[in-house]
Length: 264
Image (cartoon, rainbow, N blue to C red; front, side, top):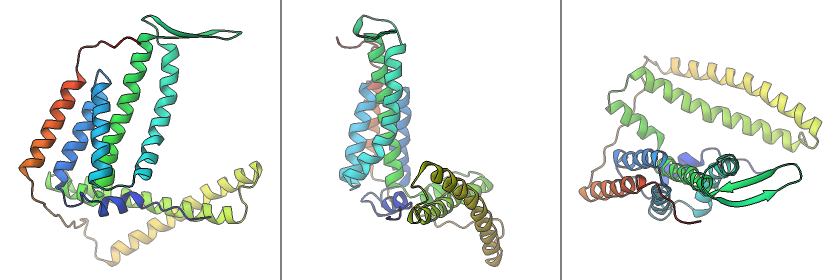
């Protein structure tokens, strides 16, 4: 079985074509898109945000289309399941279509369809903005930006340790899982349950050991309670600021159009 590369997000964030773009500009674009998308009262703005930021991520940052589509489909699939439920439990408006079953009747209305479309578009727009940040901005630059904003040092150091520990645990879990698969550990339901319980217990022990190793390594390097960060600053171009502000203004205007829907 081929090993899972759990560092692919960091790899693309460090090698994308927008790597040298100022971090503050990318965060303004991404966070502004997230805020507008999740607060929009119509689907026009989230869909506009999703289209623009998907274009920037794929064609300007040169992220592979298949990877981006796979990442975008994961939350979209969960949102779609929620939308299906909303479609049949929300009332109001004119009947759109009805499904009659032997024991009950399901009916979707125009108001329910419009509300479901808004929820789905919010999920897609917010996810596209979040993926733009994740795939174009290395996390180490985010920590450097937090330090420049005078965020408490203890919070930044704890966040860095937690972030590193996440990948350590994922790496250990992937290694254990691959070893179990090579030994047919998940060939049956009973074997899968036993293998998963062994994975959980082994992962707890490995996490404890890796934590002790990290503490010893920090002591050996004379850790004094402060992590050093290499902060890099890139030039901010007026053209980028103008385009970002224009994008956010258009998205904001589309977000609060009159609450009316086209005939369905």
